[in-house]
Length: 461
Image (cartoon, rainbow, N blue to C red; front, side, top):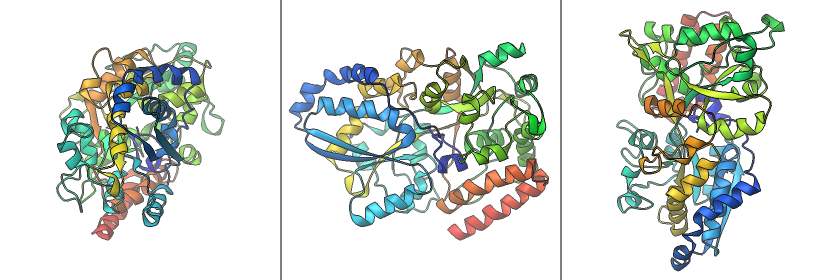
């Protein structure tokens, strides 16, 4: 991102996005002016191409700060083109909005999506296949994007529709890291974490960083997200469990319960922000707690960085570190990183739209990606744009290596039937809360969750 992340993805989280949640401030005029210059060299060629007309788009609120300067540069290079981008909420109103627009015959040519939302759009016929365009090199060949992130937008065998077809293009290679408040670490006398640290070291630091207890607790060591696919998928995978496939869920087996216990115990011990407080914020995101200093550490993705930077300002210094290692089922340390992306798709009647394809070509070009990277919120999902001198490496936290490790170790969310995805958005946060403050054991809470997901798969069939 999102950026994803069950409920946070449905409620506006960028994540993996990884399903993302912060309303990113519109990029300052100085930045917009500077990045427009990146496209100036292409202006003459674009004019010769004869592009003209109006291009319509749906853009998620949190993406506005990243995409607005790209749109401005595209319009600068193509003075006869007008891009009308509607800024929309990434919540439960989005799919009905697209359905209404399609029925009215005015669905925008380009719609924003994200990894685990896309199967719903595919089944509902709200997006068109890009495979024929990609085969023809429009906007580029499919091999231009990292296969792991592109896979989020390709229905796998067993999917109800479009198996093997490409329905969207990943906007970034986003993956989880731990952001930490350097000022609070220094105040508590805790050394800054380093890439390669362990889960137990993270918990030990969180204990030293927590202030108060119970109802009087004013600071938590960490804000983590057991209800977010970008956390639970890689942790469950380390324990040998695949949470969801196209045909079944596996959420309450013995190994799965051990994985859930690892993630949930910091909440039960008062080290992490309780699920009830996450729920109360509306989208389950950690950003509100990190940016106010209520959580000294927070599980985040690069896509959230522009919003965090705007909210934090000069309040405190912060940095990033890779996810802490956990032992897998063979005892080998692994980095449980969740990965994902937001993506751009075309309406069914727009797969040959000249303006839409031209905009996507610019967006994913070196010039377009450079503009996005300068906002701090994009790590390109294309190898050609992600070398050692990529602009994103010079923007944001000092430890850029944390994001390199994240992209290299990311577990991409599997595609899930729409009915299952929609119910899991609500049911997984409920199960986590039941297992922390709801008085249920992990076995009972996730046994109940498994039953609900079984019913959802049956309904989908």
